[in-house]
Every structure is written in structure tokens, then in C-alpha cells.
Length: 459
Ligand code: PLP
Image 1 (cartoon, helix red, strand yellow):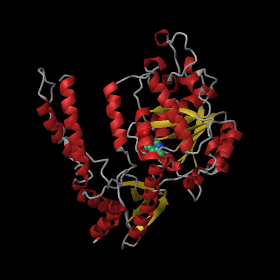
Image 2 (cartoon, helix red, strand yellow):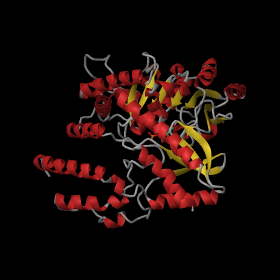
Image 3 (tube, rainbow, N blue to C red):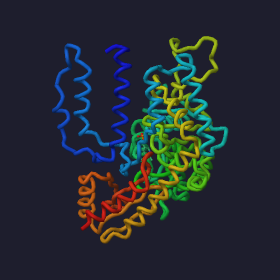
Image 4 (cartoon, rainbow, N blue to C red):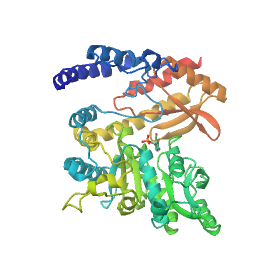
């Protein structure tokens, strides 16, 4: 395949994509789950000779039955991974350029558009001007970066050179409502799962600030070295929020930095009326949110805001001679803010998305999602045999049947039916079905089909 072929096939791919998206409502949302079925369709060895694109494209279409359609307007599972058309276009252009932005001079535009997008998003979310930041692939990497920084700041940057074997036992704090990426960060950063203290929550599912203060003090008295606190703004399970102002005040009073995981809910903060949910967040040291979840800039795109990037750059940055930028020592090299060296042009899809819909266009989508989730929740509450377990937190709520076995069976029926897609979690030990509304192109009719499907399948 050469660049002339690429032009022709790109046009064909664009037409194919248009048809795919136009026909999504006619497809079952979730792929049938038959392990090994797709792998069995593929040759088990690579071709020695070049193959024709017609055949390659036909084989691509043949794996579609193994795709769960994340852009389906009735995808209500997990959290969304939205891809607005303008974002897809930007990704095509970024792919065409295929530039690698590891340091400023490898493509100044990549770094500078990213810096401006961080500034735009700071304003869009109502955060103070002093925040700067960067774009990671995922919230998991952003949280790992924040936790590594907490560790090194606590060790006065000795861990980087001496390792952890002689270090005191470190402690990190979060609630059980935070995402497992915090557990992963504790494991990977050498803190250890046992030293991730899950601080109890109150009836609102916020971490108890007093319990946080008590845990830090008790650990210090026992000779541990507390390094920081991770707070939850919109937990994955049921959308829990820690009370930012109180918890950050406790952490800071104890001299500990705070990272906030707002991977999902952060997008909603473009609407001023939802900001009360994370009131006080402006005092945090680091915040992550994923435009690739609810804002329309597709995966992968996780934005980390930093009050002061210096400790993170001191932790993650290395500047070997082959990466020096002669005479430009003061410019920003974003690889020094993140784990990988190489970087894609992720800021382009933010730029296109924010411009093509405008903040008002994006706000109205999120407001609709929140309102429709409430409507769907009210309708599901009326179905015999179903109870709402957690009320909508923004656009996420959960419900269940009387027993776990009935709930599991209902979920199986819903997803085999294919018109909608929902997933499960456990809340206070009970199996519950999660429903979130957030797909970029969903309509009220799409959302209100959910109660209809559920009520049909309950009889
Ligand atoms: N934090 C929260 C609240 C999440 O819901 C998720 C994923 O759903 C993550 C973090 C991890 O996100 P990522 O896939 O970007 O690593």
C-alpha cells in the first residue's frame, strides 16, 4: 500500500465509518461473548507476501461481530468512551501527521497546542488560573504519576536513586469508593496494597474527614511515613464524591498533598451548577479528568491539572544529552511530566472538539444526560420487583432485584437482548446493576427505551 492507495482507502474508510455510525441503532450493543471465536477466524501466522487491501478490508468487516459498540447511543454500561465526530476527524489528521511530541523541539505545535488546551480546560471547569497540566493516555497513568510524586516528595527524592529497600513504610490514603487505579498505583509505586489505607466513608459515601485525620496520626505514631491522599470525585461504582474542602484541609494540615480522581465526573464540571459536588477542589495539588469519557474527545485523553508541576517533573523527568534542546533549556518538554517518553498529538482532538461544539453545546449534552438519567431512574423505580439502590449521582444510578441471583439473571437477559447494554457492581455487598447516561449521540428516546426493555424482561 502506498500513499495514493491510502488516499483512496481513506475515502472508503470515511464512507464506511459514516454507514457504521448511521446504522449503530440496528446492531446489538454488546458483542456476543464467545471466547476464541474471533481468534479462530484469523490465520495463526503472519503472511510472507503482501495481501490485497480488498481482502484485508473484508476480513476487518468479518471481525465486527466481536465488537461491542461503544459509540452505540444505547451504551449505558461502565462509563462512556465518547468519540465526537470532530474528535475523530482530529485523530485522522494527527494520524496523518504521525508526529511524536516527546520534547518541544520534536514538534513545537504539539506542546504548545497542549498548553493552550490545558488553559482552556482550566477555565472550562472553573479551576483557578494557577493550575497548569498535561495530557496522559489514561487516568491510571495520571494517578500513578501523582502517587510516584507523592512518594518521592515524602522521601526527599531519595527513592529515585536509592530505591525503597531502606525507606520507612509508606502510607497512602483513599476511600473504598475510589477506582482500582489507585490500588494499582500503590502497588506499582512500591507502596504496597497493604499500605493503601481505605478510610471509612459516611452515609453520603464521602470519606470521613475525622477518620482521615485519625488514620494519619495513628500511622505517624506507629512509625509509618504518610505520603498523600487520593480523593474521589465521582466514583466508578456508584458515583461517590468525597467532601473535597474538608478532606483537603485535613490532608494539608497534616502536610500531605492531595490528588483528586475526577476521571468521569470532571467533564460535568463544565456546567457551573454541578461544581458544588466538588466544592473546595481548587485547593487540590493534582486533579485528573478524562475528556475521553464524557466530553467527546475520544480515548485516549486524560488531563491532569497540577497546581505546581515542579515536584512531578523532578520525579518523572530525565534529560539525557540526546534529548537536550540547545539554547532552549526553559521550554516545556512534556515527557518530563509523564511516564512514557513518546507522546501522541492528543491535544488536537480537544482543540477540534471544544471548537466544533463549543462549551454550550457540550454543556447541553451533559445536562440532558443528567436529566434523562433521572427520568429513566424514576421509570425503573416503578417496575415491579426492582428497587433503586443508589439515586443518580450526575447521570449514574443503580438498581437491583430482591436477590443477587435475580439481579444477575436480569442483567444477563438485558444484555443478551442487545437493545441496551448495562453492567454491574457491588454496593455494600449487594450485586446491583449500574446505568449511566453519557453517550454523545444518545437521545431521550434511547434512554427511555431502557425502562421499557427492563420492564419487558421482568415479566
Ligand atoms: N478513575 C475512575 C473514576 C474511573 O471510572 C476510571 C475508569 O473508568 C479510571 C479512573 C481509570 O481510567 P483510565 O481507563 O483512563 O485509566
